[in-house]
Image 1 (cartoon, protein in one colour):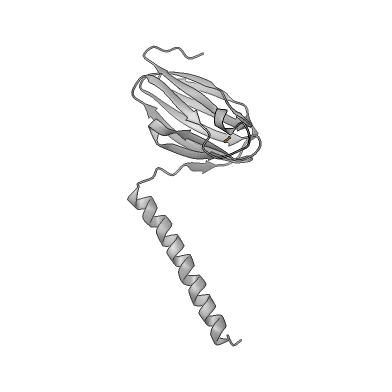
Image 2: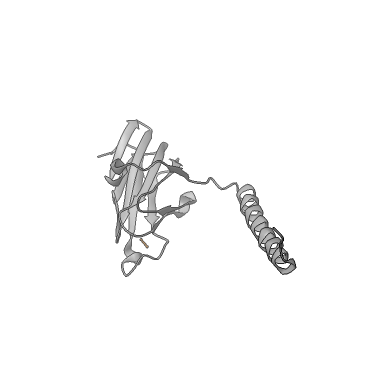
Length: 153
Ligand code: CUA
């Protein structure tokens, strides 16, 4: 098979663009040491919002996004807790952002994204949707309430 000269040129150009693209992703990853969220196998169980207490300072949160709220909408944990967030959506693509904790994830139907966050300081940490998802987008939020005492319900 012979390749036409101009066709060869196109292949080289697209090839280098692709290489540059891959390189820039790897570069950004290294530079910002971004803690890339894990993508884990899908399971229907994650569509049921809940807070699981593993031990006094270890929790699992199954966070479910849907137009236009997050469930659970209030998550109570004691200070010093480590929380694994398992994030999914029941409809469109939503964002899952905790600005103070540098968490920036997507909630996607049929997908589970996981990240681990440690809450060393007491306070109310806002979970917000940062992906436009329709008319109620602005009001889509939830709270992680980190308290000195264990008030998990
Ligand atoms: Cu959900 Cu914006």
